[in-house]
Amino acid sequence: MDAHSRSEFPALEGAGSSSSFLDHVSRNNPGLLPFGRALPAGTMPATPHGTTIVALSFEGGVLMAGDRRATMGSMIANRHIEKVFPADKYSVLGIAGTAGIAIDMVRLFQVELEHYEKIEGTLLSLEGKANRLGAMVRANLPMALQGLSVVPLFAGIETGGAETDQAVGRLFSYDVTGGRYEELEHHSVGSGSVFARGALKKLWHPGLTAQQAVEVAIEALFDASDDDSATGGPDLVRRLWPVVYVVTHDGATRVGDDALAMVVQTMVTRRSLERRES
Image (cartoon, rainbow, N blue to C red):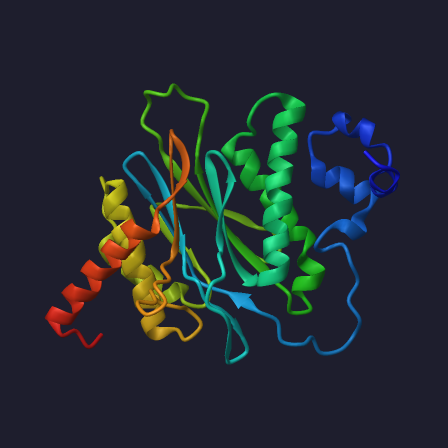
């Protein structure tokens, strides 16, 4: 570690006394945190925002998917943004809200879980991961009150059981104050969430396979994009598909573009043949 790094993280050798990287940085250099800064008074300029995220459980795990559009006011700021990330091997994190702060929060959360594993020699429980993410969201409250809010969606499986046990996916949603709520079966956040939830209620059923869960998530995002201008649907011209992660006992795996293209093409063909208006 060079002198500059030592000046940013004083007494880093004592970090082992705490399994929380967030607590260590908060004590020693809070300015390095994405929410550790004071904003000047006045109207905030338009910033890119990300929507929409859906998550659902299936037989053997959990799935999370997000569209690829970021908006800035009435403008499309980005068509390629990724809003779903692996938090660690057995959990995933989706973000809606102010894109820049949200992505920094994802990176901080990933380091937080990795730091805990290195210090304690074991993975943090899923409940513990959800609680620590809530603490990060709560720390961002002053910026949220100025319009720079971040609302994540967290999902994963417990890893304490035997490998032969059936994995059970769990979903957690949050509000801007850091309040954490466990959701059952499925959930969605973001500007298109009300439309996505309507689709999920009709399409989800117990005993879904992983492949069926992918199809349900794509349908829900497509329905959200049909009624919410901030949600981007599958882009057949640019061949841009939603970001989809599946979490099972084998870990978090991103669904490949070729597999997603087939699901999207099947859905579009079916809806075209049905001549559906809505």
